[in-house]
Length: 288
Length: 288
Image (cartoon, rainbow over all chains, first blue to last red; front, side):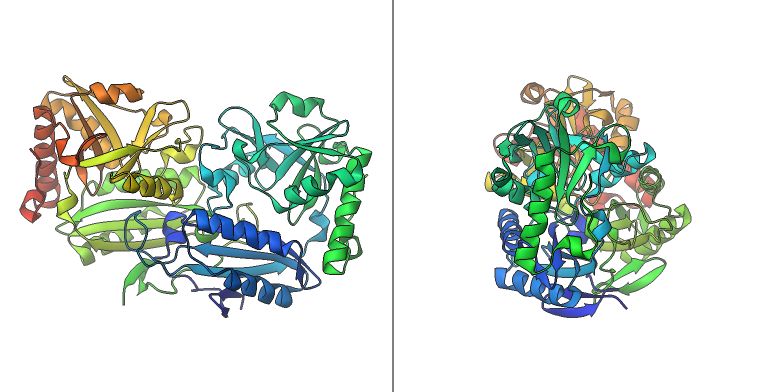
């Protein structure tokens, strides 16, 4: 029997959620996915800070201490894996109006590590659906992933493994599961949040540390045509880390500039420093 | 103890949903809300047809007979009220990929009738967020209502009761809870589905029957400025039916052309014919 963490303890997964939960009925909730290595959540502080900022935006009152307790309990149990925290506004009566005294739901679950996905090159297909940067929801990790599900499904049919979204203005936004970076010479460009992207935790690490590897991180709008001209493209994601990406040809034809290879090594070393274990020792393979 | 219909029978509402349900985790589901009068769902056939078409689009396999059984059971139990059916893709493992053998969840719930909301004029405020007509989800009733929740919250703060959305091209789309119609002389304009609106069941009734009241229904894009020039505006919704609407001033200052008043009477009579009871006999009051 699978168990999940709910509001302070582990309970059976089936029949865990109230049918009047607004997360279930109205998509009124958000989540966070983090990497646990050696019982430690990598960049746990940043994950908690991002989740609490998003909860504040949605006016969902949850104590930061509760979030930290859930994360710790899950990482201790899973040791090596992914940790997902889902927070909803909790049960509500009919209608959109916020409940005057909400009782939010904090759900935590975990899954085993899949090191083979780390750094593994992928091919993306361009999505027909645009990402709606006019909505603040484009910048927080809400449970609303149905556009991404449909776009991934279509990408799969086209022989790709993931969808790449433009926003409603036609600028590159992100893939269904990660942020995008474009390497041109020593410049490392990534779309700014206003273009409708999540403040990804690995995105944040890359922006913070790119200069250590001779790269210049720049947050700026990215035109679709610049993707074809780039020396290298990659996606970032908390579980898959840094994945080289191509829009045409096979996944493993993705170009990986030398400095980006060094960036991947640097991320492995950062994880080893923070968690006490290098992902490469767990089976993660750097490409190239 | 509240009970809900799940996959064929009534069960307690709390702890009804599996924590791995993709509707809960990823917004991978949709719903329908219908009016039950005298134990009969008004335009039940149209509600079932819309829901099954949307399920087909999402590749969620549910028998139409199961949907009909849920609707009938809920209408028999509630007699006068609103019936909500929620269908999700059911439990899934991590990730966006569709489960190869999905076991969808069909959840039904009901709530008592609030006849005071029927035909009651409302004031809308323009939303900052645009409706994303590039997504097929803008045309089906997914559980993703968080944009609408936030926009309604902002509208409330501005003294309005609901938000009106433009789409990403700047055309009028719909309100947070209903379709919009614009009356100009005998013309009754409403945005086409491609502008990012739901094929509302009451919208459908109005388009089908407007001519009986001397009105000409036209599906065409609506410019925001035309709202100020219109002789009358109204929203349609399965529970509130036809509600006069204004963007400025008090709700009850909404203009209601004579032909639209006749349309409201006609809708009451249609409900009486189909369900055996006129909403006016249950407390619904026509404005004006």
